[in-house]
Amino acid sequence: MRIEPRKQILDIWRYMLEYCYVDGEWVWGGRAKSNPIADAEQLLCLFWPMTQIGTFSVHDSDETQADVAAALRPFGEATRIPRSLVEIALEYFRNHTDDDGEPRFGAGSYLEALDPNATVPTDAPTQDLEVVDAYSMSITLCLSLLFFVDSRMELEIQAKHKENLRDLQRRASRRLTAAMVGMLRSFVINSVTADSSEGRAIIEMLRQGDSTDDEMAKRLGERFERLRTQISTSLRLGLSDDAKPEKDQLFECGWSWGIADGSKPIEEDYAVGLKVSEKTGYAQSRPWLYFTVNALDGIVDFTSRRAAALNVMDDGQRDLADALSLRWELTQRYWSTVARFDAERWPLEDIPWRTSDGQESDYYSLLVMSVLIQDLVARTATDADLLKAIGILQELAQRGRITRRMSEGDEALALHYPGVPQGLGGSKEAVGTALVLYTSDYAPLIIKRSLQAAQLTDDVEARESLMGLAESAMDHLYERRMMRSGDPIELWDDLSTFPGMKGVRFDQPSWYLTERVVEALVATAIAFEQEPPRSPVMYDYLLRLLNEADHVYNRELLRSNVFEKTALRDRLEEIGTLIARARELSRRRTSTAISKAEEALRLLDALEVARIDAGRSR
Image 1 (tube, one colour):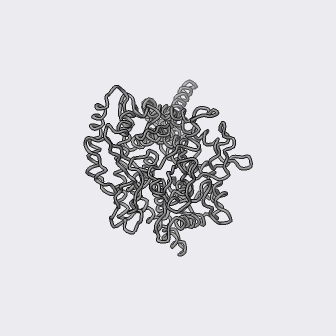
Image 2 (cartoon, rainbow, N blue to C red):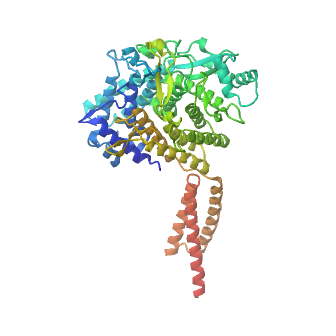
Image 3 (cartoon, rainbow, N blue to C red):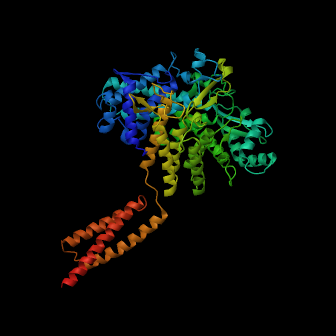
């Protein structure tokens, strides 16, 4: 199906408000009971499009577009919409802040027992166990709210609502600081020897030829020498010196599932009074791909919009942002290098990806691809890199049954439901029960990464392939929309149409998946806002058209009387405007410029034919 982000986002808002806004009260929770992560995802379904796409903004009622106001009509008139949103956001902070003013980041109802026969304890330590998802979502949400408040503050005239904005600003800023501190303390370096089980797993995943273990270890040491030096000399906050790799060690870097075992407290002034800055860490000190990608997605929000973020962050937050940005850059570089370690055949092409703890899944390949594409966005991608990436994405879409039919008992179903289990190593030591988090965002990730990759190339065929992948993934997701009275609604997730899943139907939405769909739609909208690709062949053709049009146009000008106000002069002015517009569009929209140049040539030819006919009539 064609992806129409504006229509689809507004449809999501309409159905969302039907479900969430009842008799003037906001209903928290969905398929998962209310928790800090699910509630942040619920709010981001609204605030992410509003702060990412200009035509969805509602902070200025005079500028709010009619269809946006109609979708949010349950909040009231356009003047009431921003005030209602502020009140709901304040309720989120009241719900997830303790009596001491400390932000809560517990995963709560998202946690399940690793042992299928065990139950998750309902005690506070278990429900309050913090994971990186909570920090990442909070960074994205708090920055979105701070951008919203910054835009709205000057326009609000009523004292009560202005105070609400200030209160929201204070609460969002404090939670942002806490989330950034938690994110820093969850960053890990897993340093291992080449002959350890983890070291051998790293070598086996990267080996694509007949190299020996010693040769592979030497190559890894050489490729990562500069990165190892930067880690040793530049990383400070939250990371002990013992965690940094020695010269003869292999290593991997990224984010664990929560505050890492052995993480140092952060004692800087801006972290004083925050419990998260000194909490004991229990998460195993090795990177999880899922949490690493989630962390990178949260951090990229203030790295990609740095100038705007600097306006809403204080000095301490800027220091934290710099520290996180450094970790973002190092992690991007590490996983991008690992993914392409062998130039002839990338390890990433060897699907499925195997992690250093021996787990393997197509989902992990997609996560590594996510890091690679973000790195290609941050740096200049070559056509060769991009073509390989497209081929891998296409294979992952097939293996995930995005572009292929799913069959009864298909193993690929587990990628979508219940999802890929992320065992939280160390959780048993923390709360007495080994826990797991299930992740099922395979299809939205295909859309998001395909659209990001499409922004890297001017190759029309490559972009068409990537758009086709994104549209196939949206087809897949549209089959999974929830049903109401036999009709689909724009909320997720219902898997009853899949083979063998007839009984798997839910009455309440998953904000986890719905928020990921919104993210994918926003990524699509951003891609559409860019200029279309320019083909070198078409550009050369355009230059030839313009050269001929200019030449013939100048000849016609020489033949016409400059003082005459005739239809001929009007037509020449029209042709001149067409040629000028074609030149203006030449580098941005080549095909449109070609149509303008061809129209100019057609009109010039008509003038010549008219002149010939006039000569014959004499």
